Image 1 (cartoon, rainbow over the protein chains, first blue to last red):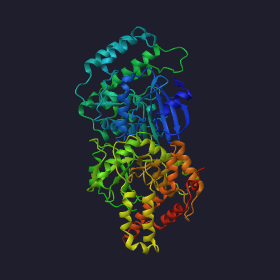
Image 2: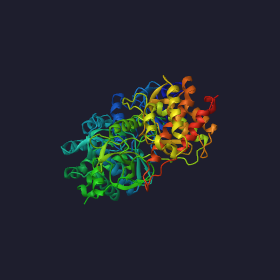
Image 3: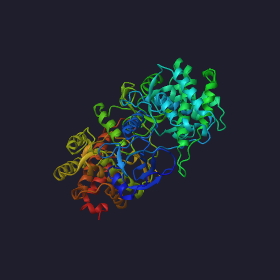
Image 4: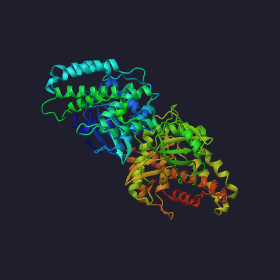
Length: 320
Length: 320
């Protein structure tokens, strides 16, 4: 993305004066990320990320997101640690918007995903789920099953612009998922957006998990289903069962799955595909001509949705 | 040092089971450090330091030390972040002793100290002092002026084994320092042991401050005096005014010194030299034959003490 909010030197200096981070050596806009404005901040004390929250993030959710990052970092998860200002607050205001500074993480996201990365991501996701226990704040998943019908409705009339018959397919899918959605599976804090962009590696080791701005309470296995979609398909749409097996094995080595979670994986993966299909569809149909952010192709997730609808059971994901 | 406490696999596994740090890949004893037993712990989630506290650390002080590290890390200081176990506690027990896990810091201590390192350390020390504001716990400095008379008394009878007339010189010094010790200077949390071993660099940038097990409340400028002694003398005992100027300038760029603090530097530096002379003298006279830890030469600090006694004022440290 582009840097959405430009920050003047004077207001930046005033903002940073509320922290004890030393002399500013550099402030560079980061192009990655589509939700917020991120700057890489280098001071005499170290490297940090300065984030200005744009309108897609509800300011009321920020204590949850920032508190969660602190909770997880203090439990050894390699995620950004929010920096407290002189008043002990992790949230401030810059350019009229909420803003925060978090620690910088080493490593980089992987371009060519191999099964070994999937295994590491599975392990890191399980670690996140375990470390999230005891986090006292709560945030319902606005993009979970109860929100899908409304989300799909916002694009229904123009869905055929993207694919013939898509509105009907989505309607049938919603009904099927509402009937089949599992109940009683383990819940907790989930990342809900652990795409390859949001995972840093040093070699084959996960060195950072970032972008907690979709985190919420939901079924833990649903988070795993999101990762199955994000990590285990090839660019041509083919499902890679070796990567799926690696992801699930990496996860289960750290947090064993209950039989009900394994059984539910196909429907969870369908639901996860529907969720990203629906938001991508909305963004695609509502894109602004000339905008710097190119919307992601919704059809990629239609292909994934159809794959999961076609499978006969969790064995399709390489589970023995 | 050596690794003091050997940990059996079974008890280590039980201890780590109280954390969510993933699979243990390696546990290697670290030879540096003389106070505690440190292991480098590598898990599938990252690198950590596992510390077992030996008898030199009072367990009652551990909440102060670990709480301070959390406070400082959350304010952007590059110091270890204590990891919370599943109960949310940062302190556990291993091999019958208190034990904690903290994050691993990149970088290494510098072997050949240049003025640029002194400037960076000065800046990092000021950052530590600023970030320490608001830390709610307190710990008096047991090795501060009120403790020196008792400390010196423990070695007085045998002080002449180390240097002719040392007992008398120490006595005169104690009296002079008691008369001249400054009052009313800014106080706060100090590191109190920021020797080159305890500062990691990446290039010329400070990447880590470690070993907070002498941290306490005291005069901020006294911490600077400790660093003057630790960083600005050559191996042959010569004072390097270029390094001192760099250290003080680096500090003042981030936290301006009050006129009273500048004025007091010579007496603070004498006091800081006496403190390390006294503890090294004690350790030297009470060393155990065949022990793995070689005591440090107390005379190094007698030379430094005499230097500071000889200076005419703070201009000797390169201050204009």
